[in-house]
Image 1 (tube, rainbow, N blue to C red):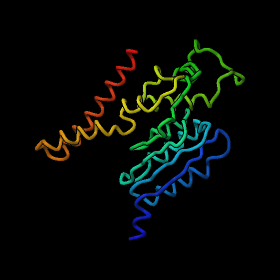
Image 2: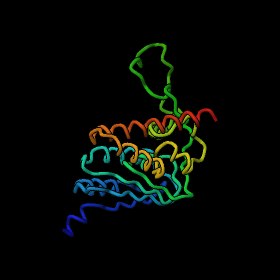
Image 3: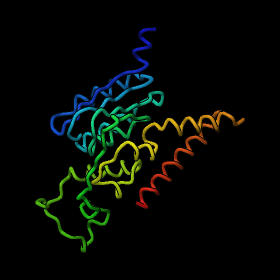
Image 4: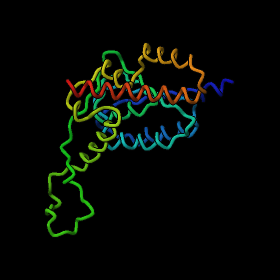
Length: 216
């Protein structure tokens, strides 16, 4: 029984730093997920920002986990850039009450990437000494993924606190969830249908919150 308990919930601390090598930490995450724990709690702490490339590698590992493993992300510090993406990848999330999220805009544009028409004569010439930063391409991808949860265009360059995160359904809203649970428990629909209805309601709340933000 004790062995099952250890496999049930596993802690995985991630210390945020903008420098250093995350290779071993990513390998440790792979090993932790290979044990197929029921819940893996990723505890994010520290100032700075996880590099975009590292955040994308963390995502790749998490996307390959067993469907039986639930990811919980706990933020004990304010998060920036790639660190925000790692936090958002949780199936459920918590964040310190006075902590904030922040992500800057990207300087990357679609013109900085080679497309399928590269051999056309009218394509602009770029040499190897151009000012394009490959890391910025990774950061642009991070923003694309963050945009699946929060409207990047409207929120980039601004601090995002708990009330907004609750509006978008990214952290627990106990009053709303309790109300929905009460409503759906009174219905005679199968449990699966109730679950789908709850998810649809949460999506609708997130869309309504997005519209409110756009009107401001």
